[in-house]
Length: 244
Image (cartoon, rainbow, N blue to C red):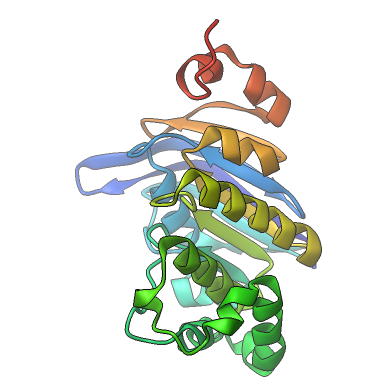
């Protein structure tokens, strides 16, 4: 399945508050693209626009699947999920009083994923062996890193081709951040996923990204491949902590 996400000139906000102003972004089949920026600059809002959770005031979000173009701004979240798009939300948003396995099964509601529940469950347990060990444990009693594993696995239960990951490093120790980012790359490579990751930890994000976009106050201020991002003076000074 060939996938391309094309975001053009998106403007969006919440009432009088403007969160995105003319954002454009492109993501091609098999790529990992990092949307980089500190808190409050519009990363999560863009993710919600792609998922149909926030409707843009202006602009286009087109998802092309095997040559067929879908205008995501005109679709509901359920319809977007049914196209094969899954979101790992910021803060994980698990059901704390349900078990690990119950949370995973809730991720498989997409119609095309239902016949593959057994296979997808086995796949998630292979990707995250700890979840198999803890399958009867309540999600709310797990550590932050374990909950992040569960949130990623829950998204994978829908058999996605486009995976959106919003702030996977939030609330995790530096070691767990590194482990989580590495796991996202492993999953992407092994299962031919296309990944859009919003992240404020520049050092970790650029380890696995093919391209990156830097967003500041709702606008894209820089885009390029990983080497271009690392060598950009603004990035060095303000995000990577490199003195020049």
